[in-house]
Image 1 (cartoon, rainbow, N blue to C red):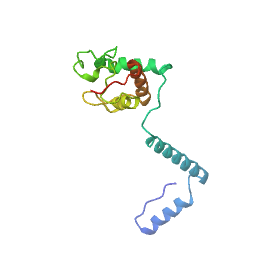
Image 2 (cartoon, helix red, strand yellow):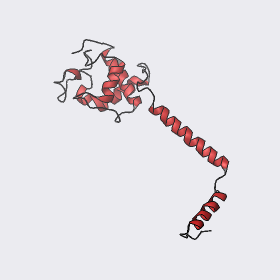
Image 3 (cartoon, rainbow, N blue to C red):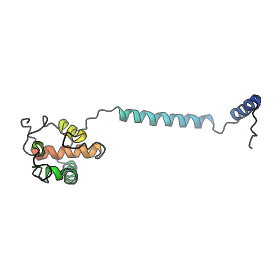
Length: 154
């Protein structure tokens, strides 16, 4: 039934009173929907507030193979498939070599993750281009390439 709209204040109050006295949802449905919305909002808040550091990967598992595939797809153009940095694109940059153990930072997994995630001129940021899982897998592969070397900084 459609109510006729009138401009008088009393008719608007009558319409509101009628709408309030004829709810379309019962209270248990409203409660369930409210709890669902609250749980989704809480989950999103927890995801947004989590520590950005990724867990250490396992070089013996599938992380190493996945990291190698990601490196071949996203990194080899500058770092070469072998990781030695001898490419036309980036051969002149001192940090393109990933196997010599010489790092812009300390060479830790956290520092490598940070470099991949945020980039540092001339390396681009891969945040949003790779998932957190892909970044973690790439870190595992880069650490394996170096044999865990943490040489001097340049």
